[in-house]
Image (cartoon, rainbow, N blue to C red; front, side, top):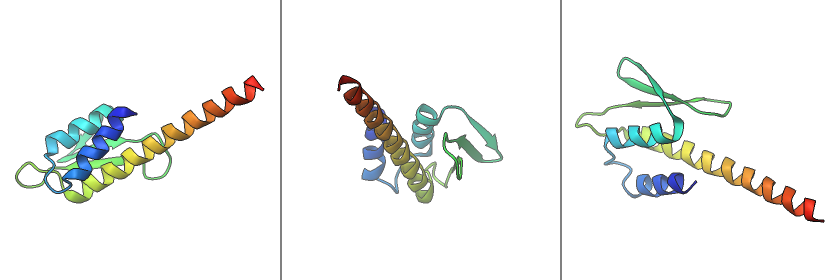
Length: 98
């Protein structure tokens, strides 16, 4: 979860000047392998709903700002899901001790 938090902070600091290659690297670390369709790099997510992160280079090798926001939303969701899972595990341990 520490990597995710670090990535969130890094992306929030400079949403408009994120290099495409850097955003792609963050997504590879968090979401795993991607597929390419034309110029789009598409990552699957582990939850229901819109299960994709779709990245495409902008002129000058920068990521498109709306795609940076899309990745930030997905990273926050992963962080939230991990925190919920950790809280559930902590609750189970507390109940077992009683």
